[in-house]
Structure formats: structure tokens, C-alpha cells
Amino acid sequence: MDPRPIGVFDSGVGGLTVLKELVKVLPAEDFIYLGDTARYPYGSQSREVVARLAREITSYLVECGVKAVVVACNTATASAMPQLAQEFAVPVMGVIDAGVKRAVAASRIGAIGVIGTYVTMASGAYQQALWRSGAKQVWARACPLFVPLVEEGLVSGEMARLAVAHHLGQREPVDALILGCTHYPLLKGAIGEFLGPQVTLIDSAESVAALAPEELRLDPAPRREGRVQLQVTGEDRQFRAMLDLIGGIGGPVERVRIERLQEAYARRARQG
Amino acid sequence: MDPRPIGVFDSGVGGLTVLKELVKVLPAEDFIYLGDTARYPYGSQSREVVARLAREITSYLVECGVKAVVVACNTATASAMPQLAQEFAVPVMGVIDAGVKRAVAASRIGAIGVIGTYVTMASGAYQQALWRSGAKQVWARACPLFVPLVEEGLVSGEMARLAVAHHLGQREPVDALILGCTHYPLLKGAIGEFLGPQVTLIDSAESVAALAPEELRLDPAPRREGRVQLQVTGEDRQFRAMLDLIGGIGGPVERVRIERLQEAYARRARQG
Image (cartoon, rainbow over all chains, first blue to last red; front, side, top):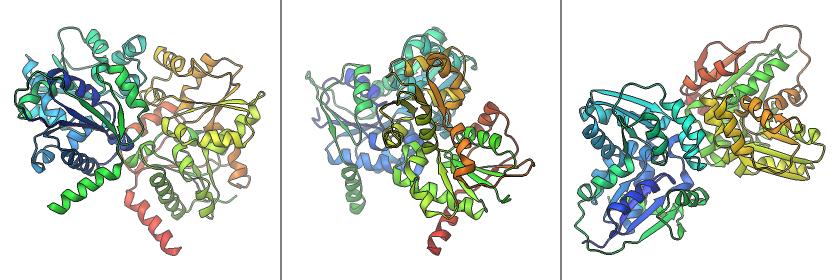
């Protein structure tokens, strides 16, 4: 087994749901998670800016010695993939293709829904990937209430129930629904209860974790307990709250200066 | 009466609540409202970037021939005032001072609350202005569920009630509460019902409108019906939805290229 860690990054805290699933599937691996909280949310930046931020972070993680990178952020995946995977020597995977692959496999009728933020839905990245992968019908919906609900810790109870009914009450008849935002897996209980067992929920975090061993070309690992390093570029209040909410991952949260990321990118650019 | 229009701007749609109150108080005046929807939300940009955007828009509005400017955006006010007022020859007023003045006047016990987005609360602009204006206690709270509720049109009903109880359920004993986000006046009914008549709600939109004639040095106007020009830099879907929600303002929505704003700013900078 290659002892180097796997790098995982997100614009903020949502990608921690992806990290949690990766740790479950790959308990012997070491991970470095970078939450770019100083520049959160990516959703309001242009595609070019987000692609640049993703390059900066990937350059930094590669300098940290990672053997592979997981883009645990829907906006960054939509903006920077597949170019990012082509530019770096280490394997790089994003959240979108993983979710789409699982959704297409899970759907019996080929009618697939996807929900996410306005920016991710407006990018059309999921919709395009679904059509290319053989979906026969695609239904997309932005669910702007879900992120603040999760960030306020309101993942069950009456408000979650009402928000789910509001956003998903009127929908096309789909039999698979991609949770296309890394915050949404925390609302899976409320969403599943509302949609019933006839709709398979595709959790991007689980999908990435399931496909990671193959896509990141990982060797089988011996029985050991891997370490997780947590890093943020900005404030860590919401980051710690999210760790509490998802459970299972802990430890110190280190602060990394944005300049460190930018310098790694500049060095890489100079080397050509 | 000076026949030139009054310029009003916001990062997006929230400032339309301010425009509506201005039109009520100053029905004979003409207005140009610019919603910078292409670069929405300002909340995630740095203070320097927002100050620059505010300068670009003010330069543009001045080139359009306005006689005064209202910054109908809490983030822009927090980032660009009072410098903006000093740099331009026309009177410029923001939303923060207006709300603070009214709150201090309304509070009998000097214990004042303010609610807004994370970014506005974290800037400390309201809190500082309140302390400077003689408040004895200041309670501040970010209410991240309120903006998506308003943008989804869920301003009354069970979800609004639950969100208000969640955000305002635990608070210091204040007798005046500033609604420090231009979206929040639309939730005034639900907030007022929850807090009861002992807490005076200070609506920034109403506060700005009440102080505008004096602060913008307006002459008394003859009896005529003013015109409102609506402009956006980016998409107008949410803009039109907000117009429907607040009612009373309508008409065509014109698209202005961002370059137009940037050129106005560059011309101004060249003239020194």
C-alpha cells in the first residue's frame, strides 16, 4: 500500500460528508481535508475563478504529498473537471460523475432527478452528465432552504419536513434522485420519508466513496487505522459545528493561509 | 423641485423593499434602481471588493444623471460607507445609520437587537453604530433561514413561524429590533407575531424612506407621479419574483452590462 495520504477539498464544510464516507470505505488510508472557508461560498464566483481556486488547492495538496485528490464540492467539480484530472499527475475525481453513474445504475425507468444549489443546477453539469450517461428523462430542482437548515442543525423535525415538501412536492415521476449538494445527505432521512421507498436516493458522498478505490487506483490496504488531518483557510466555527453534526471525524483543525495555496500554484505554473 | 432621478442600488433583489418605501414617501420623484444580480451575493466578497463594486455602481448612476444615491444594501453600506458619501458630490445615504437612528429613538430601555446575514453581523457595522449612538445593550443574531424563505415566497405560514421561533427564540430582553437585511421586512408579520407588541420592529426600508428627504436634501415636490426605471446586470428571474412578492412596483426590467459600470468608474478615476 502506498502510504501517502489522499487529499479531499471543498469550499467549506459540506465536503465533510464525503470525507466521512471515504473514511468508512477506506479506514486504513490517511486523509488531508482542506475546507477553503476563507473563500466560501464558491457558488457566487464565476466558473473561471472557481477553476483557479480548485487548481490552487490541488497544487497545494500535491505539494503536501498526496497520492490522489477528491473534489468534494459540487461547484468546484462542475467548474474544474475534467480539466483538473488532465492537468495533474495524481488521480483526481469529482462528485458529479460518481453520483450520475450510481443514479443511472439504480433507475429502472431512466427517469432521474437531481437537486442542488441554484449555481450547481444552473451550471447544467449534472443534467449534461445524466443525458450523456443514458438517462431518458432528467428533472432538476434547486433547493435553497436545505443548506441553511443543515447549517442550523435542523435536519429532522417539522421545519425539515415542510422544507422537503415545499421543494420536492411538485416533481416529475422519477425513481432515482441525486442529492447533488454535499450538505444534503444530512437531510436524507427527511427526504426519504417524503419520497417513499419507490425513489432511490443517490448520496454523492456514498457514491464517491464506493467508486474511490477504483478511480483513485488505490492498492489494497493492510489493517491499520488511518489518520485524518483537518485544515481550513478561514473561520472554523461552522466547520466545527458540522463535525459535531456528522459525527465520527474529529481532531484538531489547522489554519492554512491562502497565500500558501497561491504560492503552491505559482510554483507549479513556473515549472510548466 | 430638481427633476433628476434618485439612484437606488443593491446587490440583487432585497433593495426593492427599500425602493418600495421610497416611492411611497416620495411619490413625485423619479427613481433608477440598479440590482447588481450578475455579482450577487456581495456577502461572500471581501470588504474591499464590495467597496469597489459600490463605487462602480455609484459612478454609473451619477453618469445616468441622478441627484442623490441610496445604498439599499446592508453589505455595501457596511463596506463602503461613509467613504462613498465623502467621495461623490451628490448626497449618498446607506441603510445602516437610518435604522440605527430609528431604533435608538424607539427604544425606551436602550436594549436593542439587530438581525441580518452572517456577513453583515460579522462586519460589526450595526453593532458599532448602535454603541456610538448611545445603546446600552446590543444583541445581534444572524438568521440564515430568512433570505431563502423570502426568496421562495414563504413569508407566512408554518415554516416562517418555525424559522422565526428558531432564530429569535433565545434572545436578550430587547425592546427594539432592527431588521438589518433588506429581505427581512417581508417577514415582519411573522416576526412581529412571535415577538409581540413590546418589541418595536425597525424596518430599514421604512427608516431610509423616512429620513431620505432630509439626508438627500430634497426640495418639496409638486403633485406628479414619478417614474421608476428598473435595471439589472445579470439574471432577472428572482428579480421579477421579488417584484411580484412586494407588489406596487412594476414595469420593464432593463439589462445593463457590467462593463458599463466599470467604464463609468474608470472615467471617474481618470478625472481624479
